[in-house]
Image (cartoon, rainbow over all chains, first blue to last red):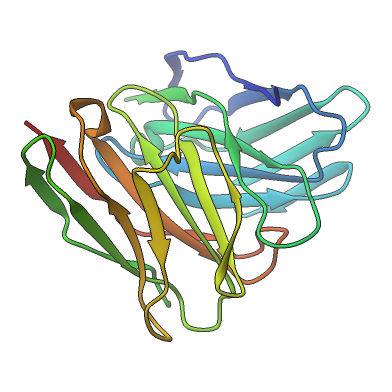
Length: 114
Length: 114
């Protein structure tokens, strides 16, 4: 059973601070890693994808991947109240013969406080 | 920006009735998926579809579920005889590659079974 684990939170950070969200996964064969943001009652919105070890930056967001430790994280710099949402970690274990499903964690609720 | 379109946004049905949830994936995407999210729970994979056939399905996707791509644009999920526990948000997603590049979710259909 392939699992993705996240701390459910809530994680509270003050406005302007760095929010650090973490995720671990059980399957060493996992090859694609994603962070989605989900506002209450809305669909997941893709923020970042990362495929190789190291850091990937996009604006205020940095994704970090460590395949040896089976660990992926998301840093949000200069956190804004509008960043308050649930952040979903998702992984894909590539297989042949068609689309590859996303396996999601339960999500971490982030609250950015004024 | 291209988007995945789902209709209806909300469907209420009685237990035992058939429902069809509709999706229009992004036009140049080749891989299509259905996911569901029961209120307060994580996003769960139902089925993936590529080259006009199912490529993978989960244990949730039993004989009551079916998918179809009746024409070049629509992708549908049918539930033949709904149960109370089918009440959930159903998300359609599509991606350009099996790796999930540029994967996008639709806004979802909230299914309520009474």
